[in-house]
Image (cartoon, rainbow, N blue to C red; front, side, top):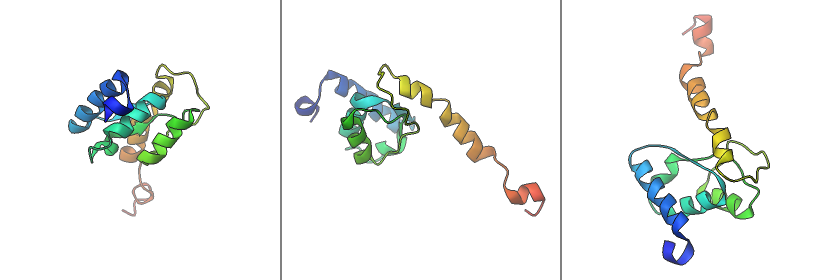
Length: 114
């Protein structure tokens, strides 16, 4: 499939995404090339669980790929820079969100009702 639809960069990214998912390591997607490679790697049924859309690229193909993958990006800053900028900006949000989910007290805990 990659030989017909993509280039070496897509093959390399698929070679990153598939073992990362097997090892349960999340990957932040950034831009049209990474999103397209993720779409090609999505033949593996569990891979989507380990893909995080870092940002919504201004490239129409990137948005179409995220839609097809069912991913909502963490950031929508109208970026068109490339070089992984959107992923780097999104990176601190992931541990922050995990901390909120894991460490946030419930109302019952705060009021002593639980």
